Image (cartoon, rainbow over all chains, first blue to last red; front, side):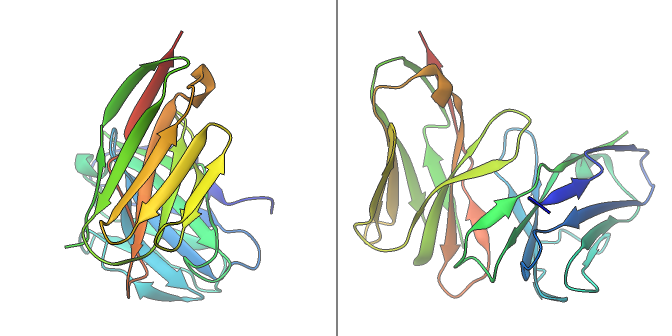
Length: 114
Length: 111
């Protein structure tokens, strides 16, 4: 595709529910990153994939958060038992091989937990 | 601790004026990025700075890097309203694969 695509663009869910957020990277990009941005803050690192594997998942806040990239392309961020504090914009970025190549960010998914 | 700090956090400036945004980071970096974010939009890459003394310019924006001081600056020359946005610096620290963002500087340019 032309750029990094994230779906849905907006998601409202009830506290305690499970949500999945999808990221379609630019074709051919092996590196994929998830970030979370709260209102008025800078993006906060969550996880980095190189191909199918999570090279660094140290930013995932707790075990309710999980991400996969089974075929090395599309990635899904999964949040279990959502809490109001999970409300934020979730950003995905991809790059050709890592941060030594230019990364492109998607438009984000705005998650609201009510 | 891997930390990136920006100041000021908020900047209101008149069209035609010059100003500088500062970005300090805590330890050795591999590279430093400057991004622009418009309200409700994603991040647009402006500059990547790789080495000590690097300077890059695009239009009214100029970014520089001093790795010894662990400091980058984004200088705005003769500001125009279209530059109103939030600007982030972000650092890839040495021997990590994480891009760590600063808190951002919200810039408003008024007539």
